[in-house]
Length: 471
Ligand SMILES: Nc1nc2c(ncn2[C@@H]2O[C@H](COP(=O)(O)OP(=O)(O)O)[C@@H](O)[C@H]2O)c(=O)[nH]1
Ligand SMILES: [Mg+2]
Image 1 (cartoon, rainbow, N blue to C red):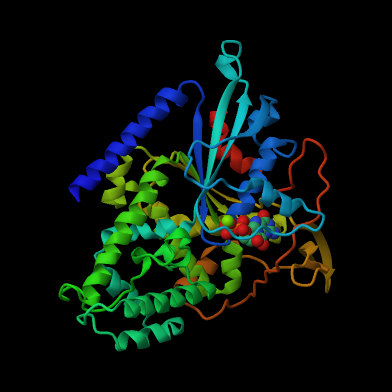
Image 2: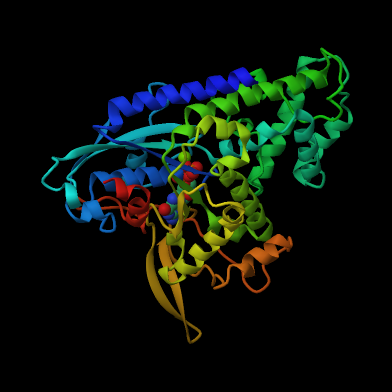
């Protein structure tokens, strides 16, 4: 334990030193983390951000761009040879095709480097020529951050938590039945272990499909090249603590520890600990549409995800970071083009309320935070319709299911977010006075003028908050 912790620290220090000498002085590097739960909009966000950095006509709120100080932007080979490259060209291709569609969902970490040639401003004008600033964008699943909580739990504690949580969930019915027939002290039988892991994974899958967010261990749903390996072939079973060597329970507990040291810790050490700026995307509208339970669940998941950004909360992470911290965190409600702009303030307020718990517990160790409603790729136009004598602020777009154009009114979000979060906390079955509809729209066909990236809502403002001070 102690040895591995020290080793973690050393790796970071050496790496930090290398960054400092080679790059920071001459060519600053900003590592921007982009995370969020599955389908929160990470891929679309990065694709549109990069396209709008390369062609900056729609970035007036990014001051360096508006002031004409960015003389060039281009893609450069990324610094990390073993991390998959973010498939920018392929994703942009699908979004801007003659018949555009949304990119396939990606399931693991990826990275892309955009380099900007920037003319300094203020005091440095005239003293310095243009500098090159490298922006390394790192896309990783928010589910991986949820795994941080496992580091503080023994196998038996984790098992107790999970079994309590799934006790009443219908999605876990067959897993519970399987458990009843399982004896932790029986001799390890690999097919039995595999059967338990498979059944537990099935539970996680359907729980996630039904709108639960607390679906850890994260790699059970996104195994990548770990599929089939012992580190993810375990499941929570009772009474394993005192199970004898070579028993099922003993081996399950051992694999749980292997998952923590070979999967969870390396992610935090190799990737998370190097992030300077972070955007956390949240599909708040999707959760609201799914009802109070989904909103309450999302709130819980946000609190857990954000605990990774409050280093004091986890001893492993505190030692790893050695005082380094993420300097700015943006909480962004994505897909805001589903809502007429007259309701964006309400959506932003809900976003703030969803993350308030985490903020109240501690400020993020001095990090600057902000909340925003944005759309990385605007798929709708706005329209105000007369409806029984009243004015309705609608959005119009092409429906994904039918391909038909439609104007659409999603419902009125409350001015006071507690009118949503209150019933959610009380686990109400449905919203009382409103139904919130969400249509899925296709991306709109684009004809981009030279110098212009894809249309968005507040992507420029988000970028200014995240990296504007470094440009
Ligand atoms: N209308 C709209 N839909 C979006 C936007 N961003 C994402 N989406 C939708 O959300 C889905 C998931 O987005 P994606 O970027 O793949 O999420 P990821 O799993 O976090 O990478 C997409 O397929 C779109 O349907 C947006 O800016 N506007
Ligand atoms: Mg993705």
